[in-house]
Image 1 (tube, rainbow, N blue to C red):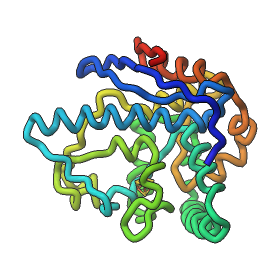
Image 2: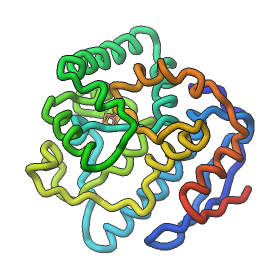
Image 3: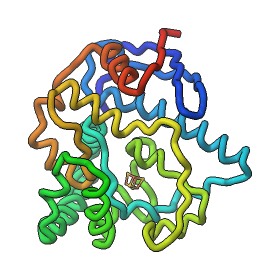
Length: 253
Ligand code: SF4
């Protein structure tokens, strides 16, 4: 999808509220765009999700999420700016007919959000729960499936954002069709990574941290092409990200 430069295998020690976790991730060492940090963030997320799943299993609970279940994919799913750049790169890498199909699904959703006069509030970078939760509820009630949901399956499973990887439940998957009416037990994540990715971008660009609902990614990118193309030294970018996560350690394997 993107030209990857030289890669280093890094041993990472993550200190989470549930204990210390060790894993290995690969990091691009050359000049790197924010989008190119995303595969590393996905690797870290997978390690953290595996830890959370192991804890649930030990407690006798089973994660009910499974491939082919798109019950949670009508929620307002928001990505951090690096993931927005990554998703746009992904869309741009599709063959023209496939790209056009995805862009047309996105356009249909954006048209509906425009009709509902929701664009401004969805693009607002102020993310306080009391503000975001009613917007998320209103969005959910519109019944707009994610533009990447095809036949009730995620068509970009390997590339799905951190927030989708972190959303796992131990209650029956069907209950996720209405997260407000139903009592859903989500698996707590020891170290969620979406907001830290947004904070990294904010620190690097001197702008407020923001999250972008998936269908608004192309529109948001139009206004942030300069940040999309900007590069930083890869290892420095990764270390900055770890610093935001807290007292974490990383060394070359
Ligand atoms: S990216 Fe995939 S998993 Fe995430 S909301 Fe969209 S379809 Fe669902």
